[in-house]
Length: 460
Ligand code: GLU
Image (tube, helix red, strand yellow):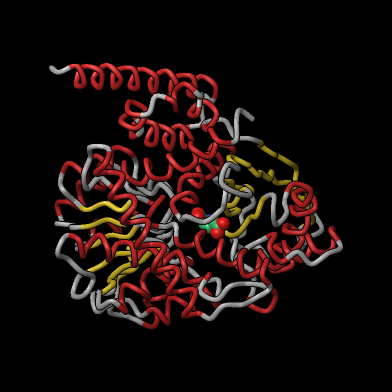
């Protein structure tokens, strides 16, 4: 072994030990936060080659600082339901990292929300936002409020109460929330209205995902799903494949899923299945997206109702059954950990060629290993679903310049951003010794920018 090789080897051992120690300390400090720890493990393991080559990141305690949110806000959200009964939910905002810009990330309203979920989402958001190349830090928030089966007025009262507590902590240059699961244009509207009333000023840039009438951006609704397909298209192209002529499955039937289906179909794919939390539909002729939009965007219906107008489609009474349907490309767009090791193996048995994550952390770390070990092309969420937040940053730019760009302009910028994320992640993977590994590449490319900004700004 040459002297250089010996030094590299010893640095690598040091970096491995450092990562192990840091992860262990994170486990001790955050016991029971399984989702947060899962997200941390995936990132820190892939950073070993970076830390070995640039020990200054270890010396300046970057990981220790990155793993601790700058601020965690937790608050009571009382509201009155239609029966006059008082309900109490819990609200959160985790302001994770502001090295690159104001905290930026969505709000999730779902009964499963707890501090671990919001911390995992906020932590992922730091790297995702860094990858977009836009000046945005990482944050996330939400509530264990369940919007399902709530009336419009109940949703409004809940949003107003939520914002009554949150408003002091956010602002166009401080923290800019947006939507996530359970939070769409309607909720953003009610949240914005309450913020405006409490502040007494019209600060358009405080929230993104707004309606087009009052500061929203064209193409924001489509951005996450379209962006996912643009990213996966780049990955396929690099490997001599394409959407055109392939069979695609997209889990979920919310905003990300609907626009991923739309763009995949536009690129010539046949999308045969989608789902909601109750079950999934399988339409061999290709999903009729207008019907899905009618059920899910216009109405508040279950996906099972699809078979009423499409009697040839099958309904499977369990949302995880979607992964037993054969496909060339799988786009998980429903929720975290929807693909575990067994599911990954089932997809491989059905000869899946590529997986692109539209949801946040839809594959467990074990599932990712299975895909990688079986040469399935894998586009990780942090990179592949960054289109939504990227267009949110474009919405902020439009708001601060008081301009509104055309759909074509925003969409063209989105395509460029997704291509850049793909190229930068591939480049980082090659530079750090794991060519083609987009999981490592995205983590590394996202990390380096944040770490360098943190070093430049001193220990704060
Ligand atoms: N919730 C989305 C995400 O996971 C978008 C966040 C935003 O637009 O701020 O990235």
